[in-house]
Length: 133
Image 1 (cartoon, one colour):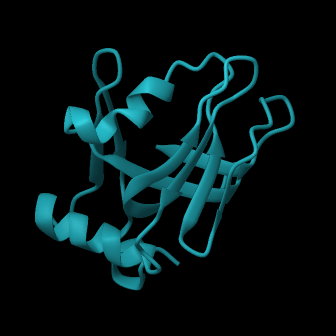
Image 2 (tube, one colour; image 1 turned 90 degrees about the vertical axis):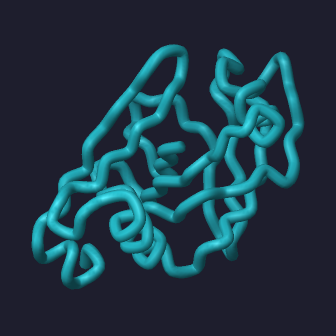
């Protein structure tokens, strides 16, 4: 899941924030992903978080997150609260690279939503050696 706290002005201004290991978000106004988030565990799916404070900033990978509460709405966006277990997001990315990729390759995320979606996030040598700072 890709979340931006401070969105561009022309986009829908969902209330999303990450603080003290808790991610609170509003679902989409059309509710298209509500059922998928609510039923992820039962379907055997995992939800991984890429978060950034402000638009155009790089996303930070926080790892797998877990839904702990939801409020389903029909006339407004549903609300979701996730537990974010990592306080050191760069460590999660390094673990993913070691486990699923090569240290000299870009990190590849593949997500399936209504078909297939694949994105590659290349990392420079400097990002790999200094944790992306």
